[in-house]
Length: 178
Image (tube, rainbow, N blue to C red; front, side, top):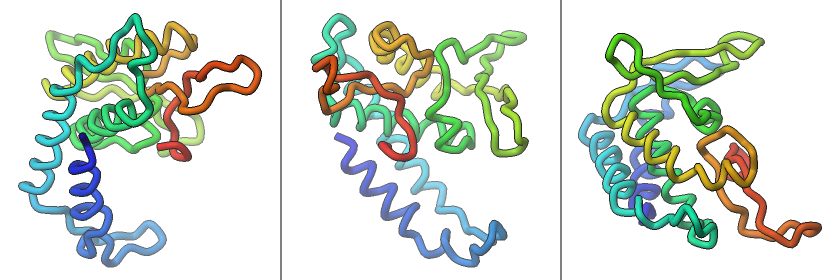
């Protein structure tokens, strides 16, 4: 259950006045949270990923319950964003096959738009936490990618049936539904 993770993240990161202080128009003197807080958040997320890895049965989309999926994706996104320093928009649009081995080292390849008007491809080193999270995310999302035809890893099964097909569509997590 990531309620604890979400509560810890909200309390220690989102509602932390030290982090929000002195921010205006993109100019910031942000103070980052103590390492032990971030480490605790990462450890909780990693525990959740390990404990819930077997919850999803690839041959049974009914096991992809919205709340379980959201918790699982939240935990993985915490790992990826803390380890890679990427934005939520970059995290949510990571595609299958994003891990590449270059000179014996794993790298993650993703796209960003923030720094330039056009989309650019970014390659960053991927540590063991990132590699394991991506592998689990690729396995989790494979049946959803197969059904939807989308290449993205942060997919989930909607809570609601489509009015026309009467089935729950596969959706890409984004800012509005995250």
